[in-house]
Image (cartoon, rainbow, N blue to C red; front, side, top):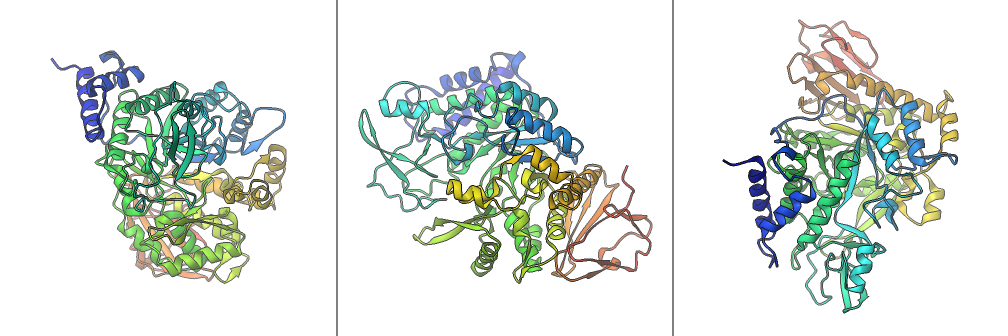
Length: 586
């Protein structure tokens, strides 16, 4: 009789055979499979939960806030305690999930150069503070899986040539043909490192302080499964696989999106879901849209993928007053099958990535967008193309300042345009993620850029709790207005079955100044027509263009106004959004 343990063990061996097919192992896949299951504490049938396939572990009430552990600080307490206090004070009825950006000891890149994966940065708090947050919010932990800090104990052991980590890192030769390697940065790929065994050239996809792992060594995989198990024990309900597209390297290839990378994700998914099927994996793959979609696999890789094309397309729409590119992209996006969903966001701790706009916006459109953002105080980060040319990779700017005007310059519609962007995102198919600085209406932090010398610091302000509390309590401040309007939209969204992440979505054809889509609940009882004026001019919506059923009663959920004449028209002010629903919210 085949037991659950044996069945799972066979499945893991199948993954391992695919991953290591071209690797000369000094141990058997059977032994590796046993070690992986032991690391995840799957020792018998009693430890194993058999997952249901195509099950949605999310609904319309899920809204995630993205934040650093110290985005808000109070000198009298640990930042993780302050963050919990802020959430309980200002977000209790809106936010139910929190992406806690890397909270581990680190040496650079605001946490993404991890020194020690198994501990909490003492400057932020301790594991008990993480647990307190996990008691009230579904926490997303970062699994920085591609690289770690050059100051980590593992890398120090690599230099010494002994101890854990001594064989964890990927090396190459300067004489290798590395011309095809996809680079997100312009820094040299190889870091010359003096070790006990002589000079080695360590692979560094991002920076020379971020040294890349060699996953062709099964010990690296085993080490990360132990880390994953620790994070589950400490309250992780969502895993964000950071920079995972670069995980597997083969000299002479692009070293991105390789088949082994996808198989490693499938293996991680298999192990995690047999511990707790409700734990969600999200892949952070800041790459062109078509490649990004492959990380769903056959509903057996990521549960969710970042909708990386949305930020540049939506910002472009709102600064040009033309939604044709956004509309074209949205029509091309396949519905996520049950058990998978999109993770929608328009701002994060990183900037507005431009690679996901490749093939969706032409070079001239991208250039105009970058130039407009520079006019609004934004910084541009660059990457090297396959032909050695420098191309814009990322725009670093707060979303609030990015939307202070159009390609024609600043205007008086900044807050309306900003709220419009979120109204569009909050209604879309998928789970929304909102950066803390978007909730707070934070402007560019030029002082932090000057202090750190890093472009991304412009959108990583650290607020004093007393200061932001005072601003949020001031009715005429941008911060109060933004949080109040954003909170209202989120509360409305959470009450609508038609906004379930997997509810039907259909793009409306309303011209280039009106962007619209229709959502229908999974049980088909609720319909919502989401229409936004994305221009500086008043627009008229003909009800006949939307095809409202005359047998239904319709209401705009945002304004609360009834739609009396389904053959008439609506006038939309600049950047106004309506959510026209066929039943009153419960």
